[in-house]
Length: 607
Image 1 (cartoon, rainbow, N blue to C red):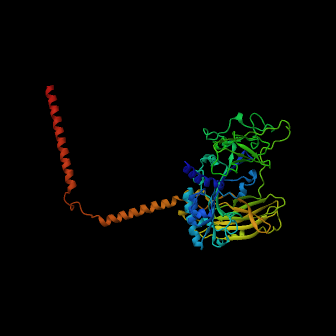
Image 2: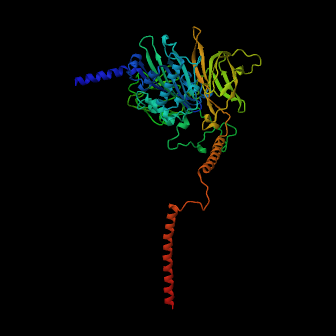
Image 3: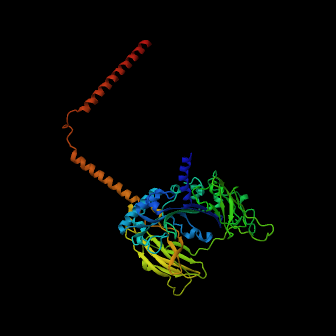
């Protein structure tokens, strides 16, 4: 018995010693327009000595072996769908650091001696990640890969000795469709595999029914001031759920309009009547619960998670009531805008947020229902201009909402090779400025495209004055592709990756570092599309002509033409035909004789 206890202590003590190396947390934040932001965060780390010795504990072994094989120092992977409504929802979660453009984004720092070696390791990395996450990352070839110069900065602590041989490569697939096949590998990387904890709330039907969602995986080295350097992996899922849509029961999967007596109308309008309904602002006074939003309850907490980190937090004013499962402990933060909950390890947790009710003592005081979203540092919109199938243009509208602070940022675009931009047409002007605009573009990096070899890379360092709107425009020319290069849905268009905007903030030393990131929407470029029925018609016509010509020539060369009386003697086929005819003739003669005998017998009876 004593030996058994000693063995259990040897196994359990190291397990709890490393329990603080992993933590997970869910943050819920109600947003305007009846939406709810749910941010799932999972973080774990491993020491470099254990990583090099292949002693994986909480770090996923499958991903760690890929990083070792490709010699990757830092990795960032994004799966995103939808559009973040900055005008209604405010600033992006995590300051945009965990956000990606529509589709799949991947950038990494690789250690290599030459560019050719870096490209080879990049292909190894993309192919391995493609199999791990069930995505089309293997399609990130040279035409979809760039080397950013100013846009991305490493988040981890890299030693100076390896900085010279470190290469940054960036690839994007804007046409990739994110689905449940990518969520399942994401959950398998977690220590608890989505069996317990906040990961039990992640359901593919709810996640991919969201108005906006982003899955992020970040691997970076961390070297604290005191302690051993570690390799940290952070997995994040952010989704914006429509509260009314999420409450729809599972037995009614098709959204149907509510009946007339259930419509919420604004009775203060002059034209309100029984037949006319103006909808009220459904963004106010919303109620929800975990079981309604995610379709299930939260099953306990992960035993490997740090117990000092509360698993669930809610950003809501203190004036609103919140009800939870019995046994959960609520802790309100001093800011008065958020609260966290401590949950038991074997407790099914439920959280209910009812409608805000006015205080009976002070009925005239308005109840704060949601935390007012923060104003983003910059608004960005991008669209196509021009007409026709030969040339076009791109216009990006950048607005600085701050009344007294200018914004400095880096604007990067990765364009496909068939969009040939005219660099001399790049223009940045301030709206309403009739005179000479100040120098808005501080620095430009341009790498032209090579047909079917690489895309166009454009990076601009810009500065926008306070309370102003800037229009950034340029023209481009569309190329004509070969008919084999068109996809099956060529008439739909070609996806153009979102632009990456990195907002900079100077520190005390005067150097700039990124504080906010955002992506614009992706674009759909329409190229000249041929009539794909014409190659089919040409193939059919030429095949028919060749068949007729070949058949006629073959008959002339092989067939013998002789007279009828000069033909060969009767062959085997003719003999067989003659014998079959003789047999059938004998049967016909026998049947004829029998018929005549029957007729004669009938005449005798008659006589």
